[in-house]
Image 1: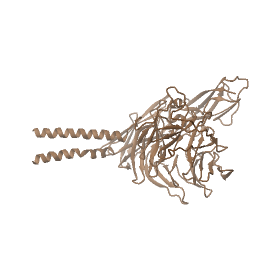
Image 2: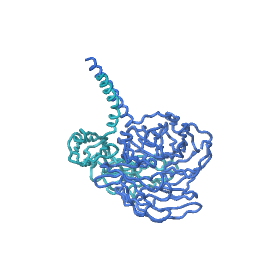
Image 3: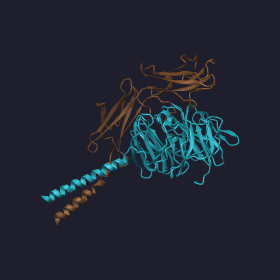
Image 4: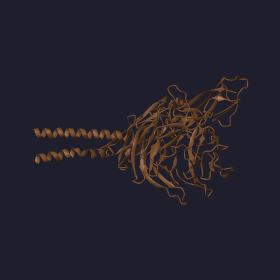
Length: 384
Length: 226
């Protein structure tokens, strides 16, 4: 009898261990990311009630001036190794500019909604037409020719290198995670996975993963999934995420912003690894689209000068709706040490930085307010 | 001796169980998604939210072992606010309508698959908000430098597919501008006699003529700074 009791006790204890294991495993699978872990960066919020001001860590700033690199608004741009700037304008015209400018493509595109240069600058992916059923085309910069893609999608994203895009193909009764190499003359979309799901977005996360998530709002909870292109498998990364916004940098580093809810002033920014898991919680707040990775160690971000006001907004919804515009200052973040430094003095400027990119030693961005392309020559430091 | 060996085997078996259980945790995951058929401007990359009377399509997927499970043979039942709204084999998508109520609300959707590996159940809360009018922040401030004012307005979350289906109107200091070619953009010439620093209220009103209460407005106060 004692032996039976002993066995039962051992079984109960073991069951408890198993249950605890399951509980903590579950916590790992779908946590609400917790702030303050992993060596948070210095507080740069500008202090309580602060209207911006210096974010600390900055010494004497270079007297670099920010000058427009274009005279007219652009939707997207690319700068090649020879310093020639290619840009696509809201009209759809493609312009090249160095010492002089020239029209590369004079084709006008009605209702141009978005355009994105491929990572190597050889193609421009263009979304246009009816917003409820957009058309997609690519412009081959080298061949100076347009090609319709014939895909049904609301978003598309370039792979970090090459000429492949990923998108969610919308079908009558399903949606398909798809990749497509736009270079071949005969296009061959590759269906990776088919869902019933509605309103999904796909983004490359390095060369071997695609992040899949529900279109986001601070009002709505969604989930983040990682599709492994080598294993052809989908895995849940996070669920119950509000206001998810993602930007990828290097092969194994990206940025994730999330909102705590509809209440204003509750968004957080995280550094994430190649699988989408949180590595570090930043103590400053920036929209991922306002940041660019210089490499695995450094990050440039356009941070609102009035950090206190920015932090009070319902993000990312309010910025996406254009309820407000930011006035940004450019900062450089050392991801290893946590040091943050202001790159230059933009006093007197009112720049709402978007589409920040680095070409050679120059940083470029588009001011969302006027659509002009700006260029900043980056300071070289011994850290590099 | 046999009893002891038996006991050790049982203990080892139980302690080895976590890997099995963890595999269960990585087992079926229900993905419930939705899309509201409401208007958002082309530049808006966020989610289109539902308002009263919006058509919403809700979809269910099950992800297991890295794959999306084939639900074509599964009986799927759908409930909205505890009321049965549809069901049948492979019914992975269903169309529902947001209730005709004024103000913020939520819809609680339940999906049930009683025959999927012992039964799966998942809940989803869909917020129902109101339509919204936005006056685009121009230049990051609300200052008028000169005597003319140009601002852009945007409707969000109306039950229409195209901007032309909405009635948009502006007022500047309580007066409607004489004409405007594009109702989404306000061009207004201000009285030069208005003193510097004076606030000029600008209001955008948007309504859907198909629904009496589907309307929104936004007011901004612009300061003249010549």
